[in-house]
Amino acid sequence: MSFPQQRPRRLRRTAALRRLVAEHRLAVDDLIAPLFVKEGIDHPEPVVSMPGVMQHTHESLRKEVRALADLGIPAVVLFGIPAHKDAHGSSADAPDGVVQVALRNLRDEIGDGLVLIVDNCLDEYTDHGHCGIVRGDGSVDNDATIDRYASIAVAQADAGADVIAPSGMMDGQVARIREALDSTSHVEVPILAYAAKYASALYGPFRDAAECAPSFGDRRSYQMDPANTREAAVEVALDVAEGADMLMVKPALAYLDVIAAVRAAHPQPLAAYHVSGEYAMVHAAAQAGWIDGQAVMLEHLVSIKRAGADVILTYAARAAAEMLGA
Ligand code: PBG
Image (cartoon, rainbow, N blue to C red; front, side):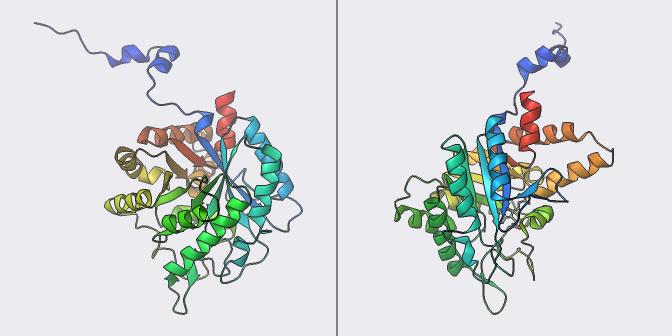
């Protein structure tokens, strides 16, 4: 008895057949563009380690967000670089702080046509560059820090943020922010939790862009050890229990197993952050003429979807949308 020969190549013969059987697709709808806005500059300043990325003025930010909306990109995530930094990051929750001003401007520009996500953390606002309140011995005070995050979240929601995204990896931050939002008439503002965020060396270019490299020590006492996956399960389950509406794994490519595990365990929408170093590496290799940068970028982004992410925060959002829309 003979069986028909299995020939998987039958379904790869033409581009149309391949398109028909594609299991995952990268779409403009999947993309979230991270954007930087800096206080006190007259012209946008390019970030050298991230080709195509700018520190925006309020005016250039407005234009960029308009262009992204016109391309069909559904969301941006905002990071602010204040003119003044201090130990408590006091401009982070000031009503006239750089991100709050940007949120009001953008709401004005775009209405409800695009989702305004805002990063909630302290590192861009503190003079020491840590994501929290630092004690005399250099350690980060968890509970004092989440009180600050709560106050920042309320200022961000007051300024019109659609989604608050806490990235500091403090224990209990989601519950504390939820409580603060609920008690200030922001019950409808969702939380996108940076649930499993690793202490990664891939954040280097971001720290240039956001001017937030820690002035001493590192972030390993709050961000996760790259060696751990079960710990990610603990972190994510806690954020879900605390009321996270959406989840995030960060970085993306070196953590595709974590993305797949979170996808399998939780029904909430799942984001992956394709971080600055992941973006910079592709550009650097492409500039050297060693890889086709556009092709590698799209391959990386679809692999993040294949692992199970619903949406991707990526500095390649605009370029990818232009390629996908063409
Ligand atoms: C912290 C924050 C960081 C990133 C996003 N939010 C920096 C850090 O944790 O050191 C990094 C993102 C990237 O590398 O693209 N506010």
